[in-house]
Amino acid sequence: MALFPIIGRFAGDFVPHLAAVDTEDTFDQIAEKVAVHSVGRRMPENPAADGYEVLLNGDILPGDQRLEELMAETPVLPLQWFEVRWKE
Image: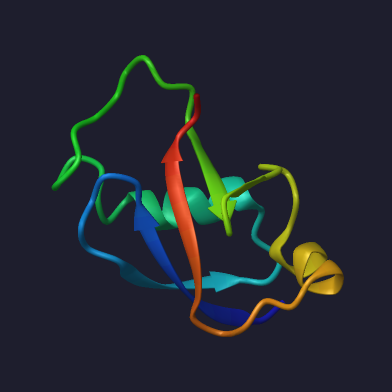
């Protein structure tokens, strides 16, 4: 359990955000932590959507996967850029 800084941007928003996430957070939790800064502020709510998804380098990350699991598989640097969008 460790705090880890990322840069997250909600798709369609022009403002990226510095977010402190925990290495034990799932990508569903990380998506919520990023979306809270955009949805309902600069991005409208989407009642038809079934939550959010997180992308890294264009690849959708499983919502139940933890950040620490991804870090064991692939290099993730502090301030890594993650994209968050509505689930399609």
